[in-house]
Length: 226
Image 1 (cartoon, rainbow, N blue to C red):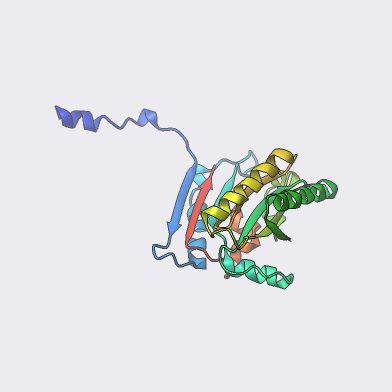
Image 2 (tube, rainbow, N blue to C red):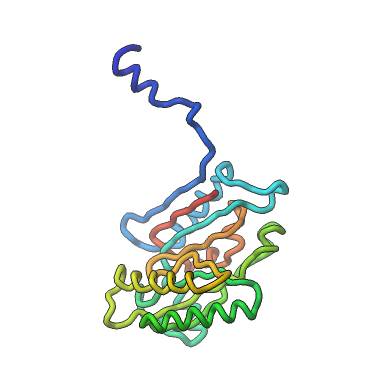
């Protein structure tokens, strides 16, 4: 082979290959949320074991995560059980928090977040302890596991759904992160939510029992293994 075709043939060189993270996505083109989409996204990340690091014991991963739409049906169900009315889709924001295990430090961080939320002109609704199964992960992950909670924030009537509301939630998140010590916020949005941790790829759905609930529905699912 000679000429331009030769140059095209030589664009790829196996010496350029390096290990890299694994990513994947599932999208319902009609925008219809379903649990099947969540399940399909989890199946993708479970096939990415060759793109995921793990400890010498093979029990704890470098990191696995899933970003999906806020599951309105599930959130309404859990909030209603606590006597809280969320309204319609995108009428509220959901935050995911990794708090310190210390009850005292966690209470301080929660109070600080509530203060920041109200100072930014938003209405804090409630906290929700995320149901998890620690036995699904390795010992190293259990030893450093944070206290995992979610919160609900109401959208003001004068603020438009979508990007306008999410901008305000972003400000709340950044102000809190700069003032807080020891708390990590994976997501705070009216549109999407992140579930993640130091798991093996098969542990993600086992650790977060939300992901096994048929009412957990989304039209998109993006996964990442590190």
